[in-house]
Image (cartoon, rainbow, N blue to C red; front, top):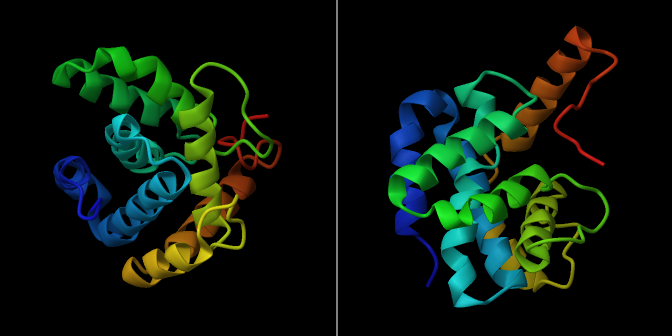
Length: 176
């Protein structure tokens, strides 16, 4: 059983004041991405990495008040891993966060976890329309258990506001 997950619960509790009114919608997104990772990659030694990556992958939106949040999210994750004694995971989880919006497949170091995380986020962003071979029934069950609560509308508003402020760089969090 991967829900609830102690790491996710503990980390999100620490960020609750920063997340404010967005806490529940982000928490559900984090869990949906995490559970999608498990559907795509059942290796037990990856579960904790997916939990950490899921919590931190978008957190820079709130900690740094920006839609260009990849580096701020990575910075938050690095501080956590250094303080928790897991610095050996920094490179892998950095790649997971940095490439999670990549449209095409990722090839390189830590390919399994980076690619699984990328697909897991796309499953959630696409509202389950993309499944990458994951069990669609489980995706739907997870979406019912962890409703969207306006997370996608929240992101669309942030992206639209950023477009008005930076029309030449409307979605800076997308990397090629």
